[in-house]
Image (cartoon, rainbow, N blue to C red; front, side, top):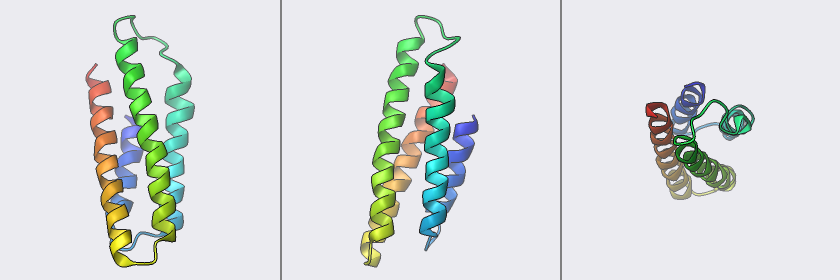
Length: 109
């Protein structure tokens, strides 16, 4: 739930017309680090044998989306044209929605 909250905050920043690239990168890195240090580091502690593969599958997908979003953040920062910035922001919004979906599914388990 804490990760979900951080992703919602990141989503609000992405939704701005002209998000501050530094703030966006900082929020993104906080989300990614929280995921890696607080969630992936648990390595399935406290999960039953039938839930572990499902949760690990979601962890892999979340990690992949964070890596791809890191590329989006980098390209957004270097974008000079408005159309490119808009495209990157749209990709990031899609990734955020996917991340929130994954969070919901894990919490349902």
